[in-house]
Image (cartoon, rainbow, N blue to C red; front, side, top):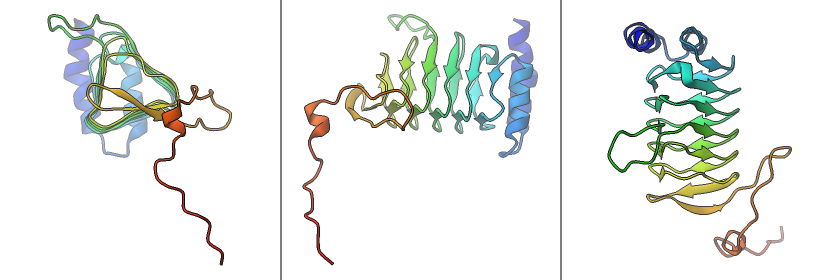
Length: 186
């Protein structure tokens, strides 16, 4: 209980008191409380982290304004991953019938949209996108875009060169979203 009391009485107020561009100071505060934070990770001062000693932030990882990370269990956020403002990562839910508690992993280059919810035990694959206000209680495939509540697969995404391959495309992914315009001559 002492780590919780120290974090809530000292760490949280210190984190919130920093100016918006004092990322280095927030990284230091999180490290002092046991977080594994890469020197280029960015955490906004209004982000809420319950137990920093269970948090790992990769290179250029970003935690947006008012994002909430319940790190009762391990939370790993990969390189270049982004948690947008008001997003929620919850490793346990005490409600009856809730999914079992478990760690959350957000892969490299993944993006959790604004006000999106990631439930206990979920793995967000590399390059996956969870759209704004979406909710997931199941793993998300790499390089795939998801949205809605309940969440559904919207389409495959092309990975950046040199990164993990995209999942196989489905026929609906290959269908054009609008008719192609014929090229015009100058």
